[in-house]
Image (tube, rainbow, N blue to C red; front, side, top):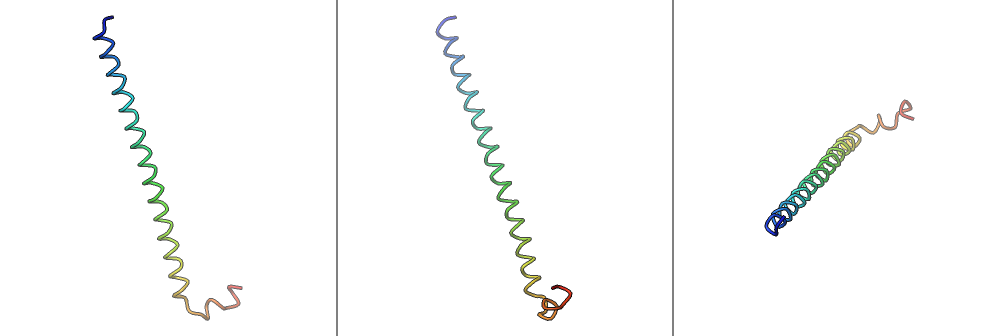
Length: 67
């Protein structure tokens, strides 16, 4: 093999490594977004539960059934 073929192989290998890095980066960012999205959903659920507890009448909270 002469120098031109080795240069082409080196360029193609470099492009393959860069493409693989890009794919890994996209997967990592997708995971990060997914985790943030799920945490956001959990926060919304907790907020809704807090609001229902705040809006409950005091007599229901202090009843003997809940103790």
